Length: 261
Image (cartoon, rainbow, N blue to C red; front, side, top):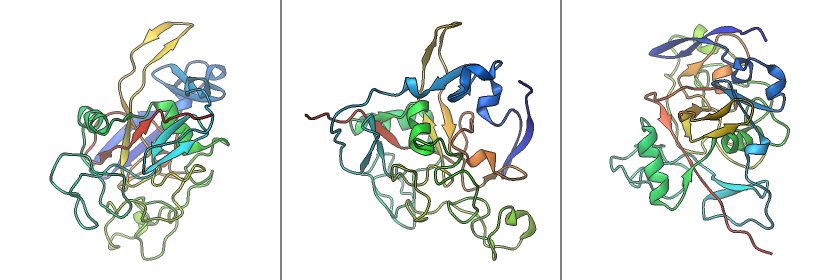
């Protein structure tokens, strides 16, 4: 498949990327007809945990298709509140209305989840939580909407797709407290999977045709300061590969849950 070329922008960092749509980076499109491709490796629904009966989750988490549990909101420090991200590098409870923990490295995010008896989500889990059973492009649907999630366009005087480029004196884009955008929810009721902060995922996979791969952790979901020229805004899509560490890196945790008869 021919690769596309986009210039993807996180303000302060410009990335020239080949194939911003992750699925198109694979050499054979047929391999990833129902999944996502990173570094030539396909991730599909078959990488998700099996369905369970009556899956129950720890507090603050949402059940995803009786397969796994995911935090309803982005992770925040224990001392975060509605005006500050806090200063103590210790993970708080899953909370609405607090500034999420930004600038987190992969290792810090992984340890923080483990400190709560949880783990980072795999790539397949994160994308399924974002795209839902219908495989939507964004957590809320297939069409990018500047006002639905916290993106670079969300604080223009008159919000429309791409308004940031025409509105240099608008209120600056910024991170917002968790759950601030009521419509920024996925099919499963998970908030801010598109926009606000990038989120770390933790994935490895065995790809039977070519052997085993160790895939580095990646970021998903875009951030408040990110966009791509044109519509839709690829960097905010569930499928976009955000690469590795950025200053707007955040995370949320997953859990296997408890099955009951």
